[in-house]
Length: 90
Image: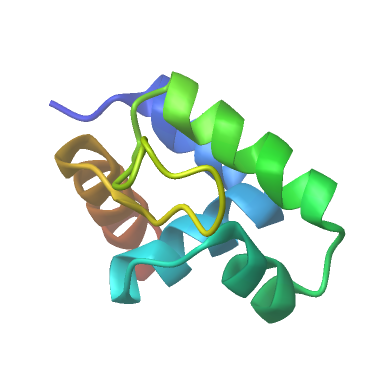
């Protein structure tokens, strides 16, 4: 069963969607994500916080203060799969 609220949540924001796509390809730090997206680090941090609260991404190195690594959760993978199905039907 698809979680349409989460699919809509991710699709409503280009930065959310981009971060999830990048993290699907490989785990990254906020600095790496910021460089790829060309947005301020504060925006990247805010988006990561939103995605973590929804349990779509996780911090893989929670004890580190700097250069924390983030990756998609299983739930995040499922949501991206749902978005892919939805957009590939067009």
